[in-house]
Figure 1 (cartoon, one colour):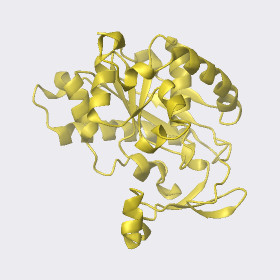
Figure 2 (figure 1 turned 30 degrees about the vertical axis):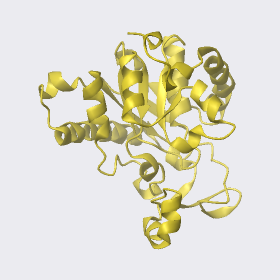
Figure 3 (figure 1 turned 180 degrees about the vertical axis):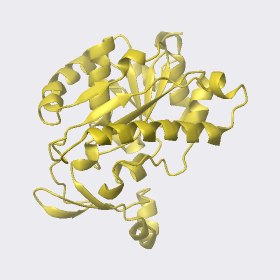
Figure 4 (figure 1 turned 30 degrees about the horizontal axis):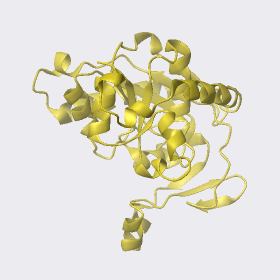
Length: 269
């Protein structure tokens, strides 16, 4: 089944021509500022696949552009990369642009359609909790107990491709997620669907509590796609979701530890 066999939906808004242009514009920045590289694509499976990754970089995460740039360079623009994203990214004047570039609202319906269409779907189970993790926990895989990605892969009958990234959490000094502050704000935080109020330190403004926005440091970012996990083949027809999740995180943590051993100097890599 191709995306043209599905009723008009979010995934049909992907524009390969626009995406190629965007990747062309971003590539010099990714290679120059972040010296980005993507490894492990030689084992990437054909057809639909769910890329499960850790999320890094605070307000300016580079995981998606780094991975997408490497993926499209390897496989071309005939195979779309979709990214499950927060609804807030889809509104306002930039909403149409992000949808054309492959960002789709994060829900089970969109994930299932994209995966069944043969698309590659990127998901960050840890979300905001992960992307604002303190610098002292920069190289720790923590999805905050979220396991819905396993069900998404099972429902669509596609493999999980665990993918790890390192370096993004060196673009700022992340001090705390601010979960206690968010709880104290009560209804104000809930109005913005915020469970965290992150505190970081960077250039040029120094201390930042969400705002002001500091400029990301030129941290070297490396991402690595790991061999696919075919859930039913490895865990049976009725797998234990928690067991699969634990295995995915264990594989990712091992790979992230290996990447961390390669780094000699923060930011420089």
